[in-house]
Amino acid sequence: MVILGAMNAISADTFGKNKMQGKRIADGEWPENQGEYSKHKTDQGIIWFCRPPHPGISIGSLSAHTVVEHEDGTITVSPSIFFNMDHPDHPRWHGYLEHGIWREC
Image (cartoon, rainbow, N blue to C red; front, side, top):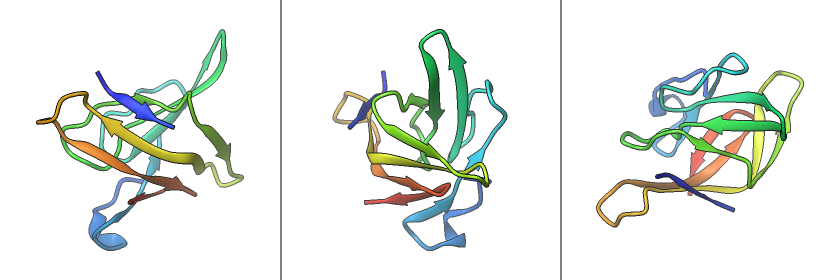
């Protein structure tokens, strides 16, 4: 289980070691690749889902975050995003998604 705390997918080399351009995929689609995010309309309202730019981490919900959708379709998420696979041997990722760019802390 992925626990989330309070990129047009391109190699991290595009922006340096700790940044990656994200990719917004079609609304209602599930992020399958690192750096993707999408918007889902539910009975409870809009919920965003994402997959961080780190191998071995699955999709997570941004329902505990504030998501600002920009005119160009990118999003900014606050506060920072923390992916924790709830096991000390599993990968973790902590960072930001700002104007569609993932940035690791």
